Length: 262
Image (cartoon, rainbow, N blue to C red):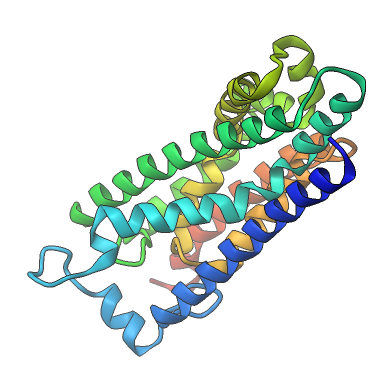
């Protein structure tokens, strides 16, 4: 892969990340939400809508929800794949990696996260029509919000998290054990890496139901943390402290009614 193709490929990835964030920002403004996902007058009216009302509400239909989650996956997960793409690029110099393999790996990775977007969009619809979350994707129960924080925080200490994080944190080890040349080989490896990545990071997507799935501040913070988790030098050092922070946040949320007398 010469420098022209390499530069073009990376620029395409970065442009995709930027466009995804811009799309989400525009969508939040259209819904009258601030960067914390808090609604203005129009957003509050939308939040209070009953999804069973006979009117067109995009957030109560699978298509728009799936599109939103798919773009969100691109905005949040493409930055975390940079170390993996870089590791494959190194193998293009020392092994039989190729441009088609690089692109195939990226396509496989995105395919898994798009499938996850479909799954979580369907879950949000079920929760919405069940009255568990509102139209903005915010859990209607304080117990559920706190429970999600605690469960995701506790997951940071599990063996499943450790295994999945190990693959995401050290992709070179995965390549050495699962190497496949060519575009189809790259696609196959990308699918495998995507599965491990979903296993590692699913909880941070579920936390969207705590502050709202269009809370751009939460999305940015979660993206930053997931990027840090995958950096070679510090990734293993932030995983469990992040879990502790989430558990403490959940406990603090449970304690809030006691402190305010609610």
